[in-house]
Amino acid sequence: MAEEKEKIKKNQYEKALESYSRAIKAFRKMDYEKSSELLNSFIKTYDSEKELVNRAKIYLAICQERMKKEVIPLKTFDDYYQYGVYKINQGDYEEAVELLKKALEINPNEGKAFYLLADAYCLMGKTEECLDNLKKAIRIDKFFAILAQNERDFESITNDKKFKLIVRMA
Image 1 (cartoon, rainbow, N blue to C red):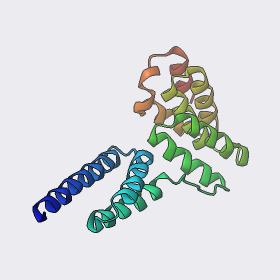
Image 2 (tube, rainbow, N blue to C red):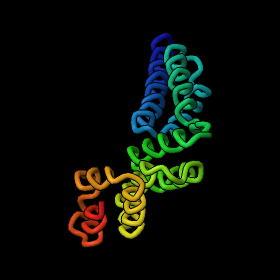
Image 3 (spheres, one colour):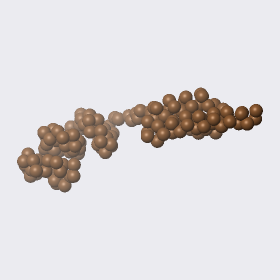
Image 4 (cartoon, one colour):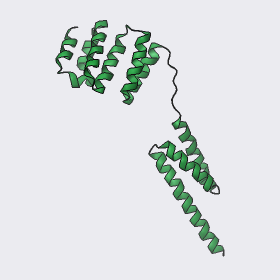
């Protein structure tokens, strides 16, 4: 009889471990929504496995924290500009363009915003928009022509006649 109870307990523990492992596998893949769902299910189903449940609660808290949407209050030109830089570095060019446009609404004579907007458009493959903004940046400050000639992000258009004309007009 004791042997039978031990076997049932071991079988229950193996099922708990398997369930916990699925949740952690989703966590490692950064699928926090799925991991959160699996962890909640695990905690409800295997509440007698105290050590694993405690670990699961820690992972669940991490999942919930990572699923929160970032809310950053943007008010000034620099706020929008710096967040635009961040979004470009993240590869979110569409969002960067929107942020930089808002920065230019605040300060329409800021060459660095036009230059970064040109960069974002170039990375998106929108050559005309890129060149238009690059021209505006260079009109404000000729230094941007030098930067553009050495910017790796502009490599795809360095042989473009319009690009060459724009950077030489400085």
